[in-house]
Amino acid sequence: MWCEDCTIGGNNVKRLLVSNGVLREKKTKTITKKAQNELIRVSKAFEKLENKPCKCLPDAQKAVEALLKKLNYCKVENIRYENVYKRNRGRPKKDGSKPKEILEAVKVHATVSLNKEVVKQAIEQEMMYVIIT
Image (cartoon, rainbow, N blue to C red; front, side, top):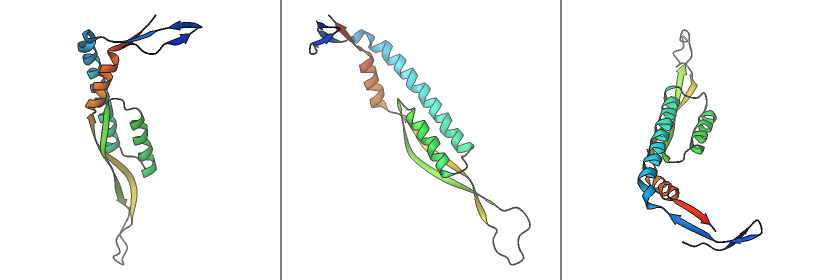
């Protein structure tokens, strides 16, 4: 597909956008491998946030935001935060009142999956290149 003419370094040039179908198999393999590696990495990160929770809700939200910024081929759904409480130590009071529960940590639960549409678009984009004459 011919694109509009442009000027590079004072010279008029023509651009041609070419899609190479021969590269489909190779690019599909590489992009799929990258996506699988990202899925494993993000799943481990969310598992860590579940097993070793953050101290407060803002910290947990910052950790999730940092993970979401790094995503290319995955999508995260059903993010929920679970508060973990602990009781005060020591002997209970004589009046029979319940001991105070203190917020100890916040666990993050989420489901991570591959975004098939993004992977498909990435494969199509990797197959294209530009020829400038």
